[in-house]
Image (tube, rainbow, N blue to C red; front, side):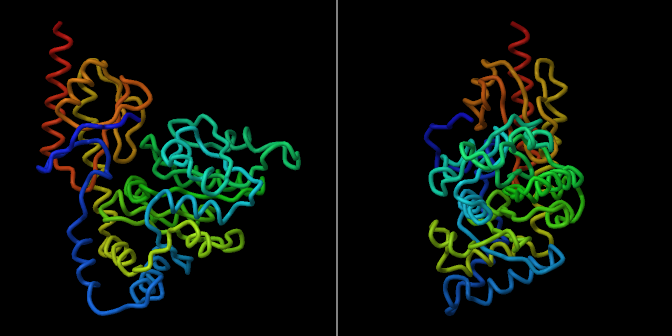
Length: 356
């Protein structure tokens, strides 16, 4: 993923670089204001966090462990640490966020070895897991201890309920625990059209990083423990890895607002729909190829490098692994007019290039 180093104007602007670029949903801001009165007990022993526990239990159909944290990297590091022994490794794809985009935090901070395998459009499969999970008992090989999958994936694809269940079954047969990086879990739920419990707790996932920042929150994610038999010490790892928020009520209030009246699903559904609109507009343009299925809110396309450069002088978006592969990300606040204007510019640049 390329960096965008240009100076960012203080004037409002819009782009397709990342759903992290979007602002905070107004209902989230309202929730923060509502809880900003009086005193509450710190470090999570407040009434708002207790309400979040109840909301999560209702969402997943049974009581679960709920641990708000500051960010996605922290959620993944704490969650993985709680299901790992020091001598164990995590099997993940070579495009996994924990491998590519977290500054080596799982390895540097938690000392967890990552065994990467080439995914299929960003996905793990049981066969890929077995290809890395071997040499059990061999002292010279980091012992496989867990599997981590992202839902939706870093390539914008979504695991079906059956795919998650098959991965969990394979992992558990091998004695591995299952972690799901759900930074964009709302987009996956919107795409699948099934209850989130169906592809998490009911599909055998042991622990989940439930994302909120990419879906309209100011900051924060929630670690959700489904299987306490294999998860240990989350509360201690959260503190020692600097993810324990003293004013927890503000983190919890945001997630409560996101879950209220299905705001999380409505926002994600909108982002997914905007991605489909963008894909439909650009896939008809000669010279552009959609590289990966657009399951959620990301569009991956292949186009000429010189066109990419010209478009990036007007719009912000990332190239991905090569100067000709681009990622266009839609968010909760992407407007149809944004998509129309961007698609029009893409068509014009491609037409100019093809005319030469």
